[in-house]
Length: 241
Image (cartoon, rainbow, N blue to C red; front, side, top):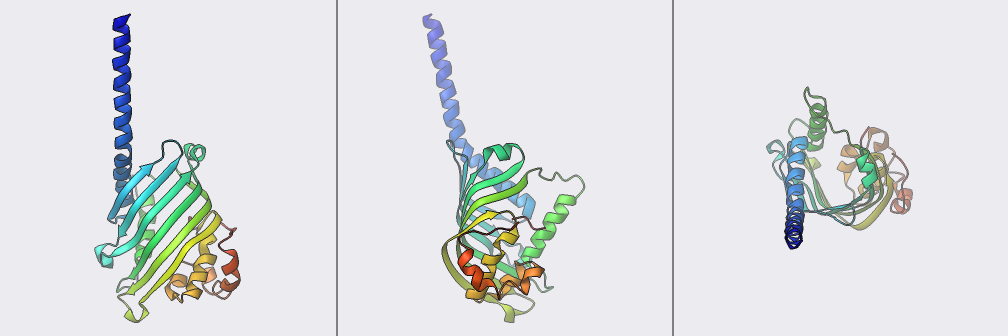
């Protein structure tokens, strides 16, 4: 009996040590996997400070995320997000859908670059996604984006650099600290907020690069009315269609 107790105690100790080791390795493994997948999908270099996965609640936290432009677009910072927190629906994820109860994003910098041929880094990224997804032998993800119940945004600096026409260069500090958009199902749901920023901060490139052709001519004039409603809730359909 004493031997059985000792054996059980040693086994329990090993399991506890393995669990502790798994917890310690979980975040670094998640960070490595995330960086690898982003490089694969975008073809761009990425830097991530830390990835933390919640053990008690289904949460994902990413600190100091930086996506760099390719050499074709100057190699500067494309996207800088010091802090990102997502609370996801585990049941939906198990069924192949991404449903976020909450997403909190601190967008410190977005830098859109246009090369001498007139192509922007956003266009190049979209083209890569399309060709990568349809390439022979590719393994497209079966996970489908569903919605974000509550999206909280802090927005810092927005930049546009054109090698084709430097006269179009723009830079503006938005300075929004806590913008809330609800029920986000596609990029269209963010268009009133984008139009409001474009109007209030006089950032012309936003309408040209982020808004759909249908809203380029009509969103800005109506942004004044949307300015009061956008933070409290929007209803439309992050995927572009």
